[in-house]
Structure formats: C-alpha cells, structure tokens
Length: 234
Image 1: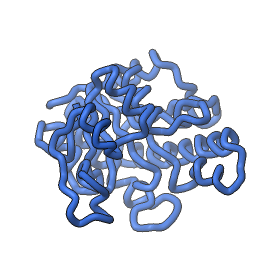
Image 2 (image 1 turned 120 degrees about the horizontal axis):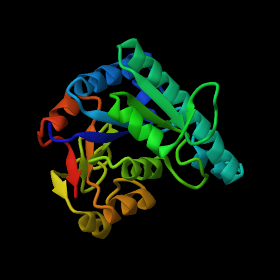
Image 3 (image 1 turned 45 degrees about the horizontal axis):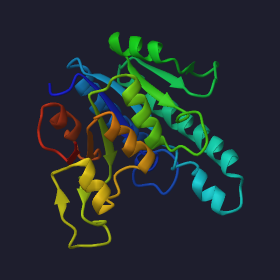
C-alpha cells in the first residue's frame, strides 16, 4: 500500500447523497464499506467530517447571527455527522472511536492526541468531531491540524468532483484538470483547494493533499494502491 496512515476529509454535503438536506444513510454506508476495504489491508484511517448538510456557521453569520455562536452550532453539526458515520462503520463491522474537540462524555471521547494515535495503532478508525473546538476555524483547518498531529502520510479530500481544475468544472466547461500541482502553483493561480489556513498548514509541514471523487466506487482503494486518482498537491 502507498500509505500507512491517512486523514480522510469528508464534507457534510457529501453525506446528503442526492438529498437537499440531512444525512443519506445509504451514502454513509457506502463510505463505510469503502473505508472498511482499505482498513482491512492494515491502513490506519482517521476522518474529519464537516457539518454543512445540517448547519453552516458562515451562512448563519450573514443572516445576522454572532459568528462565534454560529461556528459553535456548526461544530455540533459535525458531531451529529460523525455519529452517523461511526454508526455506519460499526454496522459493517469496523471498530471506531469518535473523539470530539468539545467535551461530550455521554456520546464520545474528548480529543487527546496520544489517545487518538493509540486507537489508530490498535486498528480502530478514528473520527474527529467538533472541528478544532474553536470558532473562526473551518473543518478543513481541523483536518490539516489533526493530520499533522497524528503524523498522517496524506490528507485525502473527498469531494463530488474528480480533482482540481483551472476553474469550477460545474460552471466552466472549458476548465481543465490538474493531475499534479505544487503548493506554489495553487497560491499563484488562486485555486480553490482548501481554505488558506488549512492549506498553509499542509504546505509548511510538507503534508501532501489529494483531492478526489469519493462517490466513485473503489476510488479510495485505488489511491491506496498508488493509482493516479484525482489531483495531488505536493
């Protein structure tokens, strides 16, 4: 396998499937099966999931809500999604642990770096909930931070498009896809990969990012086997 330990970043919207809101259990189960397949090969898997399918702090701020309050509400939404993903993983027979940056002892463990790494070493999938635990930081930033803390080999950003393009492929039919791109090129071209805080964290810590289509069957496994899926940022 190409990687030993990965951090998989899933957007909240990816859990909606074809719905316009909420959680599509069939889609979440599909992700769980994909994760199970690579975990059986000995790959250590950590996951950060967003909350945009339930609540988005930035959108709430635009409607007049206090930004910090809105962001905390968004963090709670990520925990709901993380619980749904944990349930799906255990439905397919994968042991998992949900660690939250905000203490919620009745439903998950508090985030402790060494505990997270121990769970990974024992073969459990670790799901990080509640972002970084701080307002004004996105779940992209949480993904970059946790990946660095647990010494992941790569950040895999699962999206609904198959990589990074010169423009938004859903709006511009002439947009072309990058197979590989450097951090410097992303800065210079102002490409939309992750928010700048998250992206800079990865750049400074020499942590590669792969943007790929998580909804295409077996893409995750192909990445683990070294196939050129999506776009590699290095």
